[in-house]
Length: 416
Image 1 (cartoon, rainbow, N blue to C red):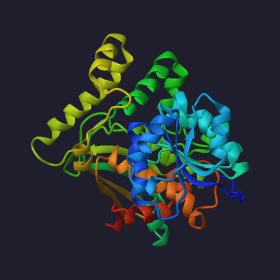
Image 2 (cartoon, rainbow, N blue to C red):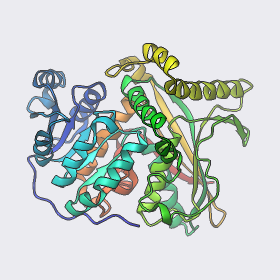
Image 3 (cartoon, rainbow, N blue to C red):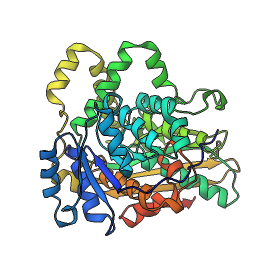
């Protein structure tokens, strides 16, 4: 199953609107665009409070002095429709997306406006696709979820492998693994709140739990997916592979579904026997299995704790709240590096690398979402001819990879 092609659209007053610009991540996104957007890019700031929007704009320097301010609330469909109609792209940081995001998705789908968010919520992407994929296809809107650390490194890393293998005549991708080799950064209250909201939905409904657990839950054609047996896409325990100790990567249950959606949206161009999983690497040292075990216990403990009322109350007291996040030093000193390895149908092996400086969830994510918005707005002649509810790989592909490389990311692929 493929996505509809994108029809032409009328000119707009603005190129990009940052919606949620007064929030923690929204300010980082606006700051990146103020620093990095080409001269003449028409950018606006959107949010609920005119006073707070004025404060954000004043702190962005001369480059943003003339940016328009658009007041809109997620509970006001008319205001969202007006906002969407005025711009070519909306980049939104307002979450939890399952709680606040669908009205803006609908407004963009109806207006034929491109959209980029930072969601890591399976249920939200599923609802968005079921309700608005066809509508967006008819209006030409590219609705692109997961334009941050969730899930651009995963999505582009696999795309690079598939393109290289195809160019070399080495067939399709089969067993493919992403390893988070190194990472340093903090956690924000917004991320915690999104996880909390999805846990609440899952613990109330068994059908929802089954949907989240399905490795193909975001496929546009679930019945058409290949039967590859048990797809253990997330490493839950501690394992040793090729001498490296691995443990669970908390984002794997979301990222893997985005990557599989990319495969299905392109007619399974990665391969009909494409098996994909993600893990976190801890190295080869004597201490590595201890660190891996501690991470596994901590990750599973927090998720289980959110599902139980007594421990949930305790976690709510100690975890960051919405609007809180790592300080500037933590953001600037952070980094990440992911490596994706694959074996193709001919037996060839490849590795792709996506890495960057800066806290992955905040400094680097602001760059990823900002460059995604710029890519959608300014690089339309290079984008795949698709519309609907898309992924970073299927909406932008190599155009986004080139932008991120120019912004200082390491993006590479090699044959092993």
